[in-house]
Amino acid sequence: EAQVTQNPRYLITVTGKKLTVTCSQNMNHEYMSWYRQDPGLGLRQIYYSMNVEVTDKGDVPEGYKVSRKEKRNFPLILESPSPNQTSLYFCASSLSPNYEQYFGPGTRLTVT
Amino acid sequence: AQKVTQAQTEISVVEKEDVTLDCVYETRDTTYYLFWYKQPPSGELVFLIRRNSFDEQNEISGRYSWNFQKSTSSFNFTITASQVVDSAVYFCALSRFSGAQKLVFGQGTRLTINP
Image (tube, rainbow over all chains, first blue to last red; front, side, top):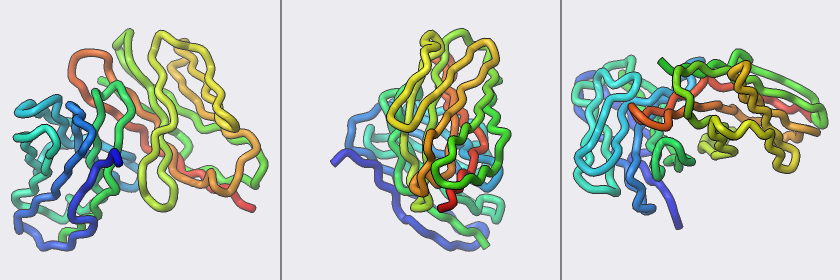
C-alpha cells in the first residue's frame, strides 16, 4: 500500500530537548516536504527536498533542520524546541510539487 | 512572492444547500499549478484536484466543481447539494512550474454542513 508514515504521532516534550520526527515513503518519490499546521495560518512549508542530499528552505524554516540521506526518508529535527513550535506537523511526498502531495497522518507536537 | 488567500474562515450551511469556497492567488509566474485538498475531522489531508495555469476549463466531478478564472486569479470550489460528510477544512494551494519548488497553501476554510 502506497503510504507516508510519520513517527511519533503524538509527542509532548520540554523546551530545549532535541527531538526528531521521522518520515518515510514507499512510493519512490523524489519530492518530500514538511509542513506545520496552525489555526488561522493554514499549512506552511518548513523545508522541502527535491532528491537525496538536495534540501531547501520553505517559508518557515527557523528552528528546524532536515536531512535527506536516503530517498525514502526525510526526518525533521528540532535541535532546541521552543513553545512556539507547538503545532501539527505533516510530512508529504510526491513526484514534484506540481503533482498531488501524499501526506502522512500528522504528528502533534507540544513543547512546554 | 506567491500567496494564496481563502478569505472565508468558516462557512456553515444546511444540508442540500450549494456552497462555494473562494480561493484567490497571487503569483508573477505565467505557469503554475493550483490544488484543492480536504481535511476531514479525522485529520488526514486528501487531494481533490490539480489544475495547471494553461487549462482554464471548469471541472466537474460528481457534486464537486471548480471554476478557474485567470483574469481574476481565482480558483473557486463549489459543492452542490452538500452533505454532512462534506464537513471538513478545505485548503487551496499554489505551486510554481519552475524555480523554487515551494508549495504555498491558503489559510483554509472550515465548512460545516448541518443536518
